[in-house]
Length: 494
Ligand code: CTP
Image (cartoon, rainbow, N blue to C red; front, side, top):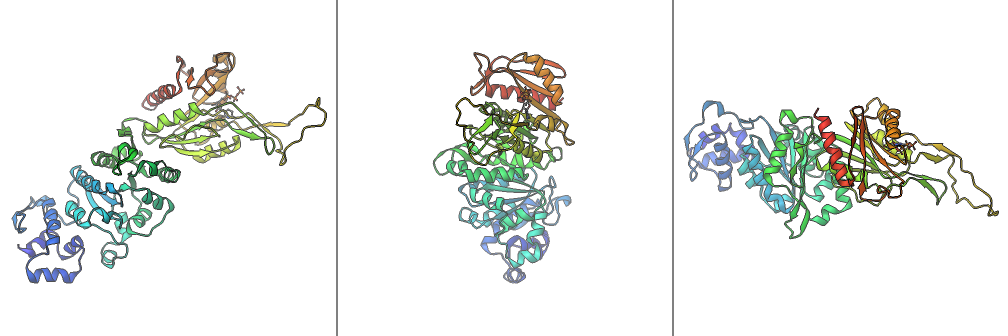
């Protein structure tokens, strides 16, 4: 082995130190001895091969040099120019991070590995370093790293920070802003895009704490890739399985390719929803009733199960939209992959909508109570002794949330309302669209003898827009949500 030639080929002593995570005296020792330690050989082999050298595997003899253009210093990407910092967290799916690194490289990315202590229980830094041909970083307090690279520079040097696998614990730490190791410190320090591929046991994935962490990270702009349903490593079946490395690599590369630079990209349930024009679009959906207190025990509310609003939120999220579901109290489960904001009164719903703006689309499916009690009693109101005596409540009007959104200075491009009418459906709903200033109204007849709407899984509606009326047959609320999503897709691609 011609060690001097190898050192020169890889960019000098400093570059080799960094690659092997050793100090300057180690390199002097290698030169004196004339050979490398066994553990260093696969790393050097991979680094030389990556730079285009032809190497004899057993003694690392350089057989042929690369063409002049690929003989560049270490850390210079020879392909897409995109740099990915691959953080491997401590879960059983960590072994798939190696394949993800390989796939990313095949797509032209320059990959640098970072591992948590937990990850090292599953795979070794050496295997990641050998695959990437780059030093794998694992310690926040390594003086060498701090002198040569430093966590801030490491965090800033990437186009994308990709966490594979993102365990429940890692997401919890990331959500809380804890920076107690190199990986989580990088997450706080980076200004690059961040993507995570969650992987865990289905019960851990279903836990409210995990759901909360996932939703909050997503709301803060972290791009989530999966998880999907299937067999998990712990032998259970359900949602929580990590996406396949090829899918993760493809989604990651899409995030940093110029045409997708502004859009969030999510892959859910194994389907790449980037194909939908709604992928990454921020959409506000209101759902359920609002409840307006009268006193400590009584309230005024509208009849609404939240089924239709929740179905719309679920459908849009499945198509990759960034959905903020603002809902009054309902018994419906929160759809996957949405950011849920629970409210009670119309005023709270309005405040939540204002906070969620700006958004590209807003869909107001909530049955907002039109009235609230002027002054809420802080005690239970007692009935008068006289059984004949009446009772008068002074009410005032609630804010109209749909009208507010439609006239907001940061108005979404497409605002959609619902109209529940007991008579003159088309006429009343058309007037309502104009009065509230929204683009479309989904109108449905309610209160009839065979009323299929409240609490039912069925709905029958018509879409009223400036272009006319589109009458839809009776269908499941989930199907109506799909149909509406199809219309929205068509509108945003017009
Ligand atoms: N809406 C709203 N805020 C309100 C009342 C209604 O955002 N305070 C929205 C609903 O979410 C729905 C649309 O406005 O998208 C129409 O709701 P609907 O109850 O049919 O109409 P109202 O405004 O209540 O009018 P009316 O009671 O006179 O029919």
